[in-house]
Image 1 (cartoon, rainbow, N blue to C red):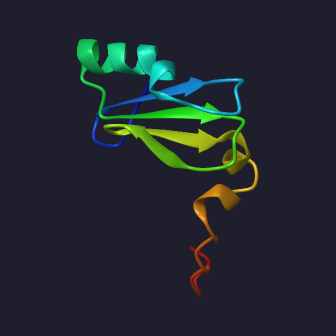
Image 2: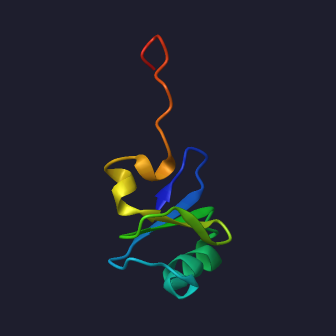
Length: 81
């Protein structure tokens, strides 16, 4: 569980599976009911980013290494930011 810049709860769960379904969301749904989860992410070994439930997304683990699961990186600004 993390908090974003607006002090909202963001849940992250890591799975060893190559697929994610609604049955895999027990912990994130419980967090949403108990604490008011703003957004949830299930990190898994698959290859696509997709929405699994309201405000809960599946994200491939490789996205944190390569960044390619989110599409091409934005072009750098001239001032380097």
